[in-house]
Amino acid sequence: MSTEQLQFFAENGYVIVPGALTAAEVHTVNDVIDHDLKTRPTLWLGDPNAKYQARNILLANSELDFTMRPPSLLSLMEAIMGPDICADEYTIMIRSANPDGPTECDWHRDSCGGEPHPPYYTRYLSIVFYLTDVDNTTHTFSILPSSAQMVDPLPKDECDMSTALHLTGTAGTAILFNAYSVHAGNVRITNSERRTIHLYCGRTTDQHISDYTIFPPRLWEGKDVATRKFYSRRNEISRVLATHFPS
Image (tube, rainbow, N blue to C red; front, side, top):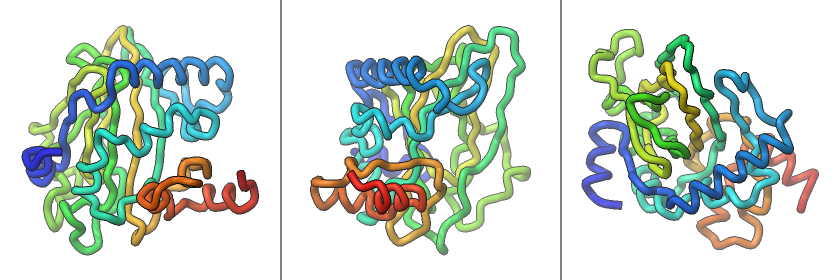
């Protein structure tokens, strides 16, 4: 983490971190995805010809555990969210090649605002990892800078979308952003598939953002105090699993 990264996030509501995953780590994650697609295709939701995702891929793939609490980003995550940062959601998404269209850029926000003004105006922090190279010929993650970095953000329809950015980067790049920022998956006409990890973090003092992800108990059992705290505010589905199906 650098003070420049933190200052950029404070002003813009996002920051790009190249090389957050090594080439070897990207290779490992993509191998796990390929195996999961082959052996558990019914656990992937959506349309394989457009967009599909796995919300509970952590259950059977411990090789991915480090990407939910990534060591390379942890100091920056904690600087933004404070000592009460905790896990909220984890998804792997694939946007398929789209050689014939149509194009789409569905601008939205992923959460409500803060209480009343959380640090960096960030109630929930989202992180996107690029698992494939992303450039101006592929689908991108796109964001409207500074669209949540104020006391009273403008409604989406009143924002100046001319300042929106389509973010590029090589495989292993991470994008940390305020989940209340206006953002989108920018779907282009392309022959390239785009793979991403999407994770969300909140605070132990707040409510969880969703009940999508089942976090398996191995993530915190027998771990250090900081790791146990990171997984301590579990969503309802994870609490049911831990209570009724202990490891």
